[in-house]
Length: 426
Ligand SMILES: [Zn+2]
Image 1: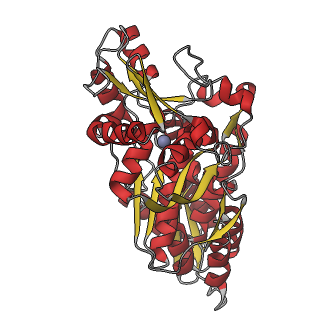
Image 2 (image 1 turned 30 degrees about the vertical axis):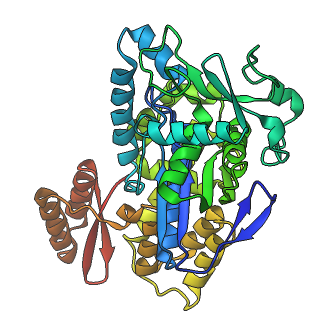
């Protein structure tokens, strides 16, 4: 199995099964219902875990929750509630919405506010090694002490300097590890540098290493996190000599065209809204259709196409099973082993009429539900039986009338050798 690694700009082969494969994916900041774009790294992480487990790996997936952030404080102040109340409410929305994807949960979902002692310890170590300095209650990482800074993201010096300029910094590229408490901030913690709260980047170095160790296999997140977030995580950990992540995977962002969106979803393109309007199966097929590291358009049209593809799979199970060639699974597996090429795997799956194989492949992506057939209600079955008898008696007018009645009830009686099969109309 090989994956494209952002740091080396090359494909990296994973160790052979059983690994272990330890994965850390950056999660959402919890202050409102998450955007549909935030479902992409969640889905990718869950699918990678699912596939790696299928192929015999021992996998641990950590997906963090950022519950202390400027956005949390600002939104809580606006709503006149405590930041804790807001982040807890938004965390339960996050669980609710991602649960509805039907992919299960990551192995660990630590919150930044539960990791404060480890974060403080991490910062203290950086300060003691002169890799960070204290300035007026803040602590900053000394970028000049980490010569590889910028390698992961390819960020330009102008981008680095533009990050939160401050007179307290020795070098404008430096970034905050700890921030002293501001008046708007109703939650703060004691530290050797005074009351305050962690910077965003340090929480992920601390949580990843707390749960996975100083060295782990895969670090993931949206492409928008390459800089500054992941660049800074890497600097914090590697400057201490910790190997940190071996492979960095960055998913492409969802690109929304506001003019195309308006019809079904309005301007609120939350995961909740998409699940309510399109359903989980269409959303998962949508994610499957785009290569994970590439940007992907999101619009009513592409969701309509995804829904149609989901229904095509469902339809396979309403038709007779046909054995796939003996090497069919190998073709599917080869697509995923080659940088998790889900669109290629999807194309292979569309060729199959083999119920067992297709159910198994759909199951990798949480889509085994497409193989389940809904049982028709008794009154529809009775109509279908009457239609069957009318046909046997060659009363085709009556059979036709019953067909229409069955369709009005939302079903189709499909004739098959020796009887019929009732199929739910889309
Ligand atoms: Zn992170």
